[in-house]
Length: 531
Image (cartoon, rainbow, N blue to C red):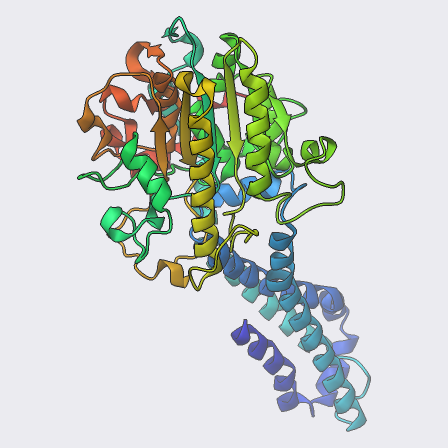
């Protein structure tokens, strides 16, 4: 930003070297072709300058706030409904990404006009305007700089690679996608309840190094304990905490949810709500459980329609949406109450307990899918329950979330419905923060960041060695969750996922994540059939 600022300030100064060429100015100002070419100067130069600076500042904001996210995620977020977005994120974009380029553009424009006026008063200019040839030179320079900037910044965020990949065709889904609607699924005679808890941005890295994480202190001791006492599928050995990776277009909330409940990635055409339909031809876990007579609720503390989450769950299938707006209607919070993305997780867990009491009072099995929010980037939300144990807010927020989820699980274990209920706790994706943040000081290229997962009270048999040294993705959670409910899956594969309990090789184990990610970016006829 500083380099661009200095460069554009020097441009008008360069005119001083030629300010005495009055006769040249008179001749060029009378040339009709030069007049036409210089005409858009007043609009073109400021706009080009602003866009150039804006591209630099937005990429800088993106890298420092979200880390190395794929460009497909950027496109999906830009094209998704933004209603309900945390005002802190929007304010951060405005303050860091938009206001600085705007101020720099205004400053340079004002300085330029002042210099022209000064030169006129010094009689170095015959009229109060910039010479036509100077305008044309600046227009050309600005356009060259703008194109160069877009090229450089586009490369930084993977834009050119994305544009190239979407033009390529693949038959990846035709080869490897297993349609759940055409797969034999045998449920047990007594169907088990499911509580699926998506923990915002929760990853295994937050444990200490001894337990498989990367931190000096274990910020998630309770989640570590739950993982060790129950089932944790890990990419590591010796009982160390680990988990799945996020494949292409799954490393953000709605993409992570689709991956874990349908075992596909989420591409641009499907982002947000599609006039009441979200991937209408896709069969998901919600569709399967609905067919088996489950009551289904999606519970979150933000607005459900952000990024089309409510549309996804109501389309697949008949979920009752309990979001931030529902909390106001039901009296959990005041009509004008809002913090962070809606309301904090302390209230979410109170609502979850009430939902479970209501759902368990019926003779039908239930699926409560819920999403926490306090650990959302960039620093999380520090609620009244959070302690100041660490010198970084995000670390304290993570530790607080760790305690709250543990207390909630302990409450569930005391309820009558627990004996017939399976609990899945999983991060929706890895944290979207810049790895240069001090919290990541121990991170190195040899460490693989993975999504947290644990399954409590599963109803299936498996060999213990299938839980360790696995190379898998969040897509494998879909068939694995059904298997944890006691469902027998013919072939042990659904979507692009594999039932981890079966011990069969996952697609990442067979094909490699690099190859899969490249194919998932491409245009796929089978995938297009989902919408």
